[in-house]
Image (tube, rainbow, N blue to C red; front, top):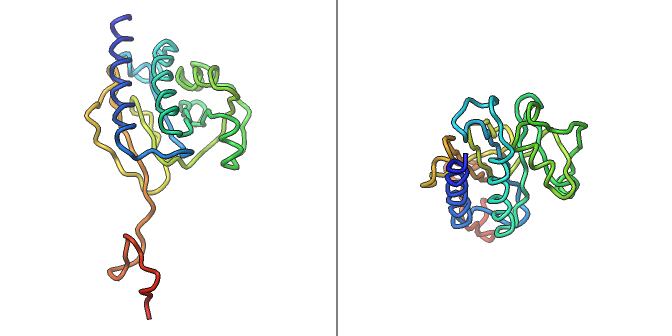
Length: 191
């Protein structure tokens, strides 16, 4: 297990560094994390969760938060309908409604459980529309990303044995062939 923990630490730090260097994260934005620690350890999702692995990932994500100013949100597993763990302050800023549940390893997952135990004032909400996110182990975070999701192609594609998918979002492009999407000149209006 010690070798796996060292590998996970290296892998997740590499992904965090790529996020920081990407320039896609801004102060106060919502960043959703889905993580199967079972997949990270090389097992099928939901079969062998590990708070030890979760702690390594949480530590690296804390660095990401400190260096970018994002708000971390942790997705629970399907047994809690992929609800989300976040700081109470974030919930209040986003005008979200708290739900009554406490994640545990078998109903919520190890990552969400670890986050719930280690955030300052944790709460659980049903849904968010995050600006960006990271899915470790194919946990399906897409339902919690704003439209339009744009996949990022980082060099680090694995954390342990789990595939990593990263995405940011952008505003929808609307209009037709006359539409302009960059540096709109308000003095040059349609007639």
